[in-house]
Image (cartoon, rainbow, N blue to C red):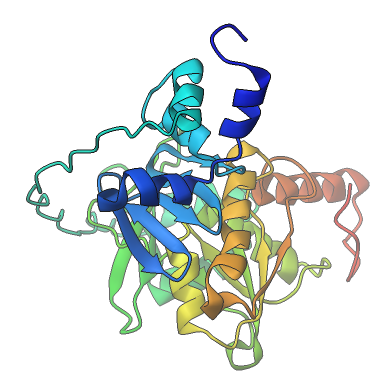
Length: 320
């Protein structure tokens, strides 16, 4: 390549990100564990066990090299980044003056509609089991909003106080978290026998968690488990749940069968290798067998049963 040799490129690719940061930007490193660091000026940028990812940009680098850091974070061109590493040139780092954090947004739930008829009809149209819908409404983790008749899914803390909420429109693609939601508490469905359950299944959306449990209720070969919807690509709810439930030693990653879902699956899997407190948890990928998500799978199963006009068989394979 013009400007640098193949030997220089190979040498630059060998420079470890942590080695570079400790030598040239030590003031930008904040230790969070034995092998875990964040950057002072980008606190969602994580360096751990020779790899790095930038969570706020939803960007991860499997090689974890300083070369990727200089190009993707510091904005250097490829040739300049290679020369910097080969010549051991220090890039000046000036820590930004501390800023006062913005006041946290106040958490609040939208007013409830006088009934939940439209939400029930919408979820039934998505194939969700009616008894399961009623149980969620009775436990206070699902209701219909008054103004726009959205599905409101909530998450509660250990004191049974609602601290998280997300909305799903019954028409179109509207969905969003409620302001001030604590992402440690996602939409959570308990197993049939919580006191004996040691398994967690993780989805992105509440409707997928409901679909997964509906398939279990229908008798398909899906295990009884806790079902947790993260509400997006954050793993805070997974970390918090595992911390509160040390008896759980198996995690089924049931996120969507797309790039975002696979990335989230890798983040969850990394918990067991990067944090000792979760080392006892076995993580397995359980991607939706049909379609992008578990609601696609559920609707495909229901459609097949309607066409065949035959009931499902207990333990039947979901593969269609």
